[in-house]
Image 1 (spheres, rainbow, N blue to C red):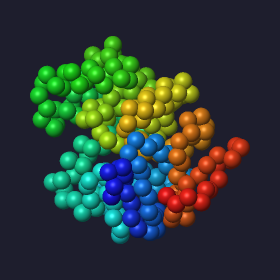
Image 2 (cartoon, rainbow, N blue to C red; image 1 turned 60 degrees about the horizontal axis):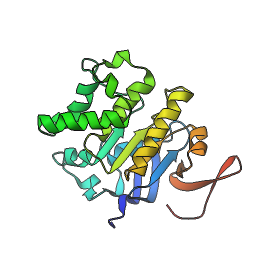
Image 3 (spheres, one colour; image 1 turned 180 degrees about the vertical axis):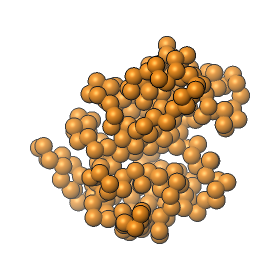
Length: 236
């Protein structure tokens, strides 16, 4: 795997709940690239992300994330992999008994960082998502869009090379969706690779990046032609 590649799937097949999702798929995601992963509900988009952060393993083939051979990792090594990744969930998964500051700080506390570094880094990432002024609010005091911004800040705390976002705008109104997409765009512009699962084609069209579709066990690169996404011939 070259230094310019942060995700690589080689002849990967993946089944989930007795259903084949991928069949001998090859994929390379370059350093600093933004990529959408689309497809109908239930096709297995979230399962692909879970495979990348080693929540599930493929039936065959090789998965590499940065310099980690993911499907060959021992469970002891998985936390090291996940520190290279920022993970954004659709349903937020914030700790309800901790305020915004402590939700973000928790991601650094579990890695053993020193208190002074934690304070500076938490304030930095909250500033990046525009929530420094809300740092002492509890999650249930925030709107859905604000909660998702906290999740993004937490995902950025360990300075990941890759951000995996699973339907990050799925529960948000159009205004909050725009805010989240602008933040993801800024994060990508700073050099972090982003892989985002979405079913919202209006977002894909408004913010045009590389688009992959899971289709009949394979992955297709798509491009806009007028109002339609059509397959292009370049290999994934």
